[in-house]
Length: 351
Image 1: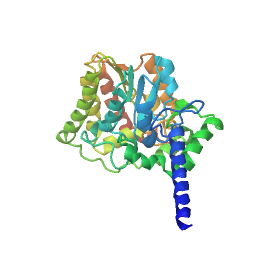
Image 2 (image 1 turned 135 degrees about the horizontal axis):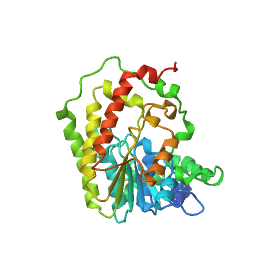
Image 3 (image 1 turned 120 degrees about the vertical axis):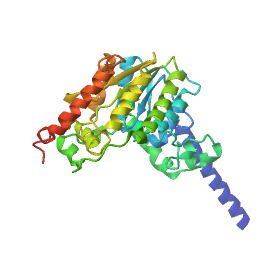
């Protein structure tokens, strides 16, 4: 009797495990095995878990790459403007090396027409030899090892939270697939909010020495240049997102302004030599970076700015070339000088 009970118990347990695993494989909310089966939507809200699966298993011809400043792009804006089918390769505070991993995965066995790359200056000063993915990521979704998939297919959170969420967003909330990983709708963009997230340094630090930052920047530009040179049929749209005046004020006071300007200059000088590169510089637009009502903190701007950048790139506005890039950087230098001279006036009226 006891043996019969154990046999039934283990049989039922095995059946439940097989059923649970089959449920995950079928719905696959992290897109580890396949894209969504109709009528399910591409519900993308967990970039650490879903970005690699969508890169490997979705159908697309273009990539939107960047950090959190790129999350609020609606893919459809690029698709309509550039006649593309795009997905995002996103990493919050992503370094050049981390984004390079995602882009290499995208290029594996696939022709990529366009790369829309939000080029963050801080990323160009990151560790160019950084290993990614690392222990902070769900490695079982990255390692291509079927034996570690048990962490996914028998994950209770996936079964009881992620699958129901995918179904709810598809059938109840009318999820907009273009807003993948977007977060703007939940945030407040206002001068008070931006200044509330900025503690201005009292003293100006000595500038970081060139020998400290130049090797890092150059090595990161090496990564970008290697990617561009290896894919001559792909058009790379590099664009520099507009950080607020608070960010530039902090760069100046923290002694990192020269480092940031060198990152922009070095990347422009080297990448603009390639025929398959287009560059757009939004950082010295006073109407954007001085308007703190467009920001929630010194770096992150509203999705209106994301949309504006796509529209302007589609018109080939804000374009930098080997002939005019230095003029644009000189304009940025003068704007930082103005920010430092008129900081109190530019931020007046805010508690």
